Image 1 (tube, rainbow, N blue to C red):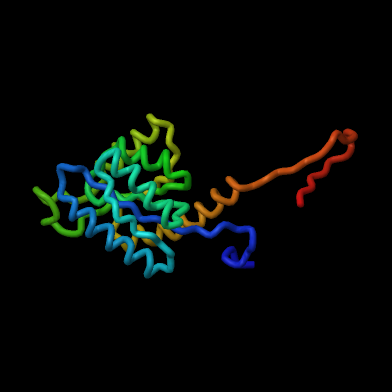
Image 2: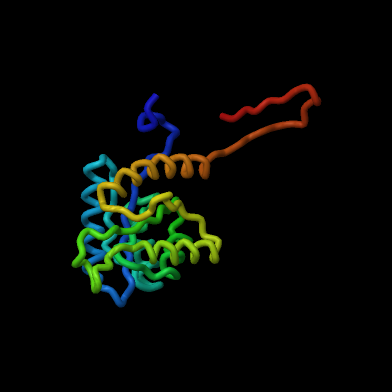
Length: 188
């Protein structure tokens, strides 16, 4: 039976949340976020493009609010350039659902000053910050890529998020006591 048709399997609605370090052009993150949304939709994912670009703590809380209002229950946090580590972990901590972290690869040599446009350094700093704050996030083995590459990984994450959401909602009901030679698990 297909997971989409199983009545007890949670449906995943991904939010794509772009972030930007305030000393970099926010438009770079905004444009890269649009490209990732487009690639995710082309890959068959139902995504909510969060309009709030996270640059600070207030943006992080605003993004959480926007995502919840629009029914997102899992999120892809996308470093469009670098990224503010503290606000990223605040978003993941308050979001309440599974969160994947990924970053943009350089598309050309002219993206930023000196040809640097990727988010790998930001990924390293962010992952260290998540660990310091004990905030669990899903970080890809190869977390930096072009939109098409990351969309494929977001499809995989949607399956991981479905499992995490399902396990989070599991109810285990048991009754007892029973004799030592009797073991049963019953639930409605």
